Image 1: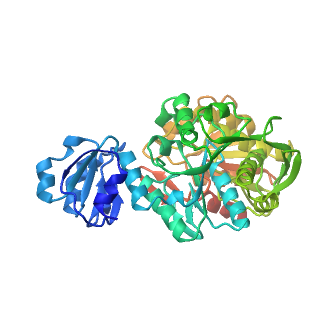
Image 2 (image 1 turned 90 degrees about the horizontal axis):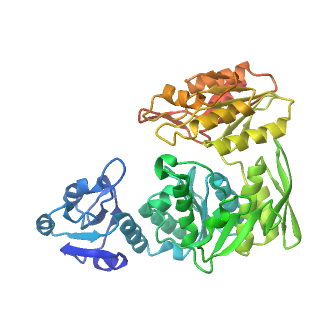
Image 3 (image 1 turned 90 degrees about the vertical axis):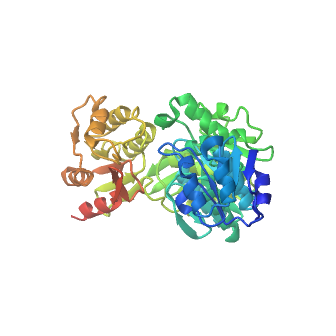
Length: 489
């Protein structure tokens, strides 16, 4: 696409320099990725500012630079370099607009389903993808664990990638023959305009509890960030909301979409009943318009009944055959690191991504429901560094209250001192049922080796992650691999 044509898709304040009639090679926000005839969009980040790298981008062959700081580079230099300087109000929105134009509005050609909430996003996307594929639709996925353009897996570093990466992903999905895409939509991505301009066919609200307050400052800000997804839905879209969450009505109060509810509450459009689960899976009933659907999933716990029902409600609202949906839920595979059960003997390890107080509490409640008072419950967990500190002490209390024994350890300390994080975790623990073992492998080893023969050990926080980040360096580390190693011993 020519630069002159592409600029028509952007809300421009001013263009200076030379707008050349050249085909644009790429849209980038990282100056290191600039190639000849790229458009470089300068974004102010939290660690650095793209405006500092404008000259680098021009020297590498950028055909245009997009800025929201007008004096970030002199007009004389732009003219001398024979490129265009495009001044916009918001570079992040401009990146989204340019990317949508460059990749020919890919979400206009896909049925895009966004899932937001504090917990359950990843599992719900995997279930919904399986349902749609079972119904005969090739489906893409964007999420925390991985991205999929049809059957092709693409590694994921962010829950929701930047807008240029997203639009390319959707374009690749179309090329792969996808007609649906299911994506996790993080609160960060909404505030930072990563999903700006995307066309959503449906959006799911799973739940909201305190998280990411290092970024959003207050719970109200966090809630309003999530709400942005529902504010942009069109009249023909669906808003699928958890009727048991007290924030669900606020989430959709300004939405134009058709609102569909799910939950245990009597007024739910898709009502969940008779939840029963053990270490082999979960059985429950969904009632809609006086019709009952018997559901089985190998995924475990009440929270997974909610995840499956949100997927059922969405697919059913979009016209997917109910029996196909039931089959899709039943055949949904284990999601890596989401209440994943390990161990062939009496002793079991559960690896779970629960990294908020609410998700940790729900995971431990599920364990307690399964074991009753028959088996010892041991928890291994830590909290991530450089993230929301307010949840640390609450998580410590939750772990202690629901466990017979707790090993407080490191998660991803990042740039923080891991022992200072552990001190934060300990602040609200009143029981004497915990031990500190900063080395995560040692903590897992001790939990497995010192527990009863039929104990259930929850290793929480990292889930699917196969690394541990310490002082900015990621080293290979897998909770699953470590657990299997010591279970075998």
